[in-house]
Amino acid sequence: MSTTTRRVAEAEARAMLRALELAGLGVRGANPLVGAVLLAPDGTVLGEGHHRGAGTPHAEPAALADAGDRGHDPRGGTMVVTLEPCNHTGRTGPCSEALISAGVARVVFAADDVNGPAAGGASRLRAAGVGCVGGVEAEASKHLNERWTASVVAGRPFVTLKSAQSLDGRVAAVDGSSQWITGPEARADGHRLRALADAVLVGSGTVRDDDPRLTARGGASGEEPAAGSGPALRVAMGLTPVPSEAAIRGAGFVHLPTRDVPAALDELFARGVRHLLVEGGPRIAAAFLRAGVVDELVSYVAPVVLGDGAPAFPDLGIDSLAAAPRWSLDDAGGPAVRRLGADVRLHLRPPPPGEQAEPVPVSDAGRPDPR
Ligand SMILES: NC(=O)C1=CN([C@@H]2O[C@H](COP(=O)(O)OP(=O)(O)OC[C@H]3O[C@@H](n4cnc5c(N)ncnc54)[C@H](OP(=O)(O)O)[C@@H]3O)[C@@H](O)[C@H]2O)C=CC1
Ligand SMILES: Nc1c(N[C@@H]2O[C@H](COP(=O)(O)O)[C@@H](O)[C@H]2O)[nH]c(=O)[nH]c1=O
Image 1 (cartoon, protein in one colour):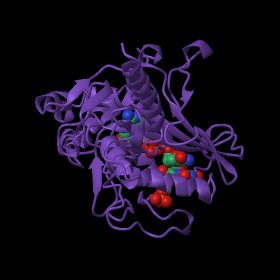
Image 2: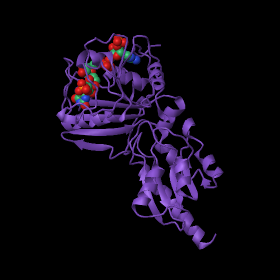
Image 3: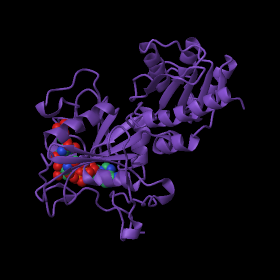
Image 4: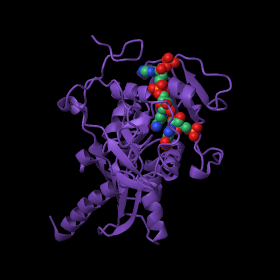
């Protein structure tokens, strides 16, 4: 191997590690976390980019744009990216075509794209004469997007669970009051979570007790959302009819008269939901946890003790510490632990599939089946 070839190979290896770092700046949801670094033929960095969430440019066009902003010519360069470039028009155009048009000569990517409609970028690039190498740091990229991949393979939305709880893990006081446990900064952040999702879901109990609107409003000031600032759907789940005067009703309202979590996810997926935010209440949260479909958890913890109020996640059937799943802090999209006013925000990822507690069979009453 010549010195130049070795230098370029080392630059590509470094660029992949940087691309993985950039990927982690994105937000979890309907799309995977992806980062990209564009190199000149001699290995110099021309541009960097990452995907910032569904509907925004993918990592490769972001890196091309960054190179353009820095006055660099991408022609003949190498795009180093953590996921196989997409080959379809989804919420944005195909990255394979963007790379071909830009005159990029070589693409080095980490993991294959498991998302059927988007896959095939590598073949398209090779057919256009672009050198294409996959599998570099593939395990690191797969680890980053483990839960997103699981949701795509299962053909269901990516599920974010949110809870706003007290120091002792309660989401309501004994009398059912819960507004507000957390302060304005944490609630504003919760509204940003809503805006990121395609749908926000609560159970019948929350509809009855809170009469929530579930819109993504401008935080503490409480103004209504700008048109199109999501979520597209507001969902009530449970057998109880939703009163005609309920605040959740209106354009984008869906009632799912079921207690079956997989059936609810199927229905929402069929309606185009790729990212679902579950806002509770506690029995719905527990049902999604029991079904093993929670892909990330955002918990806002307030410095208040509520004693015997409703626990955040009841009836999980966990009877020993050894059987309790241990979540890990997730720094994707910003620090996993953040101070928001008087409260703390925790961003967590579930244990890997092999270490998950088995889904608990659930009876018709929505409680764990004692069998
Ligand atoms: N602090 C926080 O973050 C939040 C707090 N809350 C608080 O929680 C309390 C309400 O709690 P809760 O009644 O548990 O509310 P839920 O929203 O969890 O509603 C529970 C109801 O959901 C329906 N349901 C649908 N599928 C299932 C399933 N698989 N398993 C169990 N139930 C299912 C059932 O109603 P049906 O009979 O119609 O089928 C059930 O009674 C209120 O005090 C509210 O203020 C609520 C949300 C967030
Ligand atoms: N109590 C509580 C939350 N509760 C959630 O907010 C819902 C009300 O939404 P809306 O009607 O749109 O304002 C409520 O039903 C529940 O899902 N959220 C928080 O960030 N902090 C809190 O302390």
